[in-house]
Image (cartoon, rainbow, N blue to C red):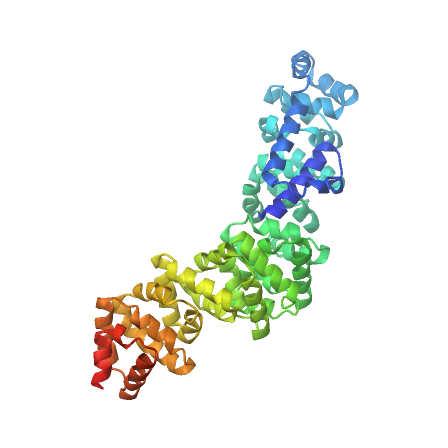
Length: 481
């Protein structure tokens, strides 16, 4: 779950423990979720450890009474809070026996006060039908946090009976505050087809997108894929609302990974939304990608944007500090992302292009060679030369020297063609003159196979730019005509 959603979930759970509305704890929104979880655990421990010795004596005394009498005294005189404190101190069989003698409404009162960690064996021993009846009572009271605490301690058979009682909205609210998020995928797999399909519809109907995004982030591949495709098929108006929620509540770190997993048609529909193309949204997408390392999620979407929107993304990326730009390059090395990264860099201002070019040239071999391979495969050398033109000779040399000798057969003709198309001869010849001896020998052979007019043009440009001598044997091939 993204950090913002984890924090919100923890605030809701802490509020329930303290008997305080979560709205009263908004001042904790900047606290890390892990710290809030630790605080909640410490508070719960403190509450349950208070008067432990006295409670142990009460638990021991209860063993002397018949079960029916002990249950009646617990309900009438001890009350739910004291019974909850004692439950984990009783023998499991005795506690299960007493629970079987108590009505569902009182057990619901006990559940509100009970820390399930301290009575897990007791919970596991209570019949599924009785758990179901208590769940019905808790749902009637909207005790979603209490439900979320207990789900992870129930067997699948029991969970299935509880799920039958959950409405579509209730399912999302319980899932949001589920204590053991690892259980979510198993819970979703226990749902009926109708319930699974209703999750996305319910999110739209009740505006429960934060709860739904949190749920999706914890699902296994199959369940996640199914629900993401349902999301991508929603009407444009509903998707616009999802965009508005992500923008207003800062949830792009949760939504972007899901959009990348949509099928290609759904991604195109999403990117075509007018709401996505708003300047504020585009800036927020860049900011979220920079903060959370989500460039692999954003770059494929940028490639689908119209020119004006791509320029805005590029302008926003150009304003990022160098370490953040470095994350773009390092996170975008996947072969299928390089074309989108190059296209984005071309749209940046001069400073942005220079920084991206330097980062590529100075990057590890996998980054440089990944760039070259992808640029060549996608015939993006016109765009690559537009970036390279801002690099000093030293950086051009670093870039050139990473080209594998065997790749020059494909790379060199494209570089020449790109220079003819764009006029970026200085960048193209800067790359060629930066090659090492083995590379120059291979380039000389490639140059000899070029059209005579191209060889003449290369020779003319090399002399005009004063790099002819640096081409070595390549220059000799060009002079030979």
